[in-house]
Length: 442
Image (tube, rainbow, N blue to C red):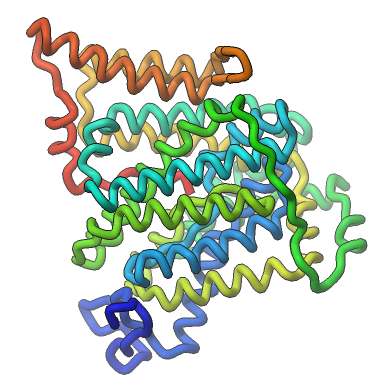
């Protein structure tokens, strides 16, 4: 690759992956094969990226457009060295719903922009000063608690949608679970998408799908755009999302580095800045916030093709698909029962991903500090505690996140000062976390 990160060299004969090797980020296969792999990345991100606007009420085509634009922006800012697709982040669902109840969709878009700006600033700091301070401030016990409470905080939303069409929702849940265990390869990793399609068919048979919007939509045209509004009261809703996005991006960089054998740590700050800017652009036009996608990491691991050329194809394909309003209208017809079924599985999986972070990093729950950090934070998040201070409203996710940070660092500092017991502090947890891969909320 050139110093500007432009262009790719042909891998081997361009037709097959060299035995025992892989297609590096600065390499590519022949263009027909690269286009096919890029289209596969679009399919991999499809179900998850569309679920967010369907759940939050945002226009699906708009979200798809900005996911494509964000992906291309990410590739440019990271100098074409980190293969990644930026899709809709599930971490935004709860704060968007809360912000919409207060200030409507425009207020939620303002919160998305503020979260993106904060992430971009953190990226700039990381690019300048390194990422160690993040690892010290957010050890695995804290990161896992935040991820877990974000998923479990959404349980009432899943229940509400499930109850609107319980038969369809139950079929969706069963289909997702069966596809996960029955199929290998890409189909097994697309269990959410396949489950939603199965639920959609059942909904059609039961007369729960309204096709009127499809007939009214044009074949070709721009997506529906919306302007944001900024309200200080939503800041507390979106701050925790920034912490999750930081963990997701760092985990993505480490995962790709481990798979390709390349040192990508110097690009961590760029990745954070790119995701932050992509989120800001999406919020400015009516799309949802973005994050790097674990689904696409799975595709790369299976194909051994890490070429960023495939992601350029994926981003361009996503943009082109967003220019077909009938396509977006079709996606928007997915009924509440299907979303409820998918939500039951998805939100539960997000919650357990937090637990997975604890397990992967061998968090010691015999330590009362870790036990208190996780326990209090989860109860606050699941019960959705709310604290109103003037115009500011802090809901369960924000308060749970604050509790995890304050309890861990506060109790650690006091225990060390008193010498009351051995405490696994940030430095020890960081060394235990060396080389780990935080789970995604993609």
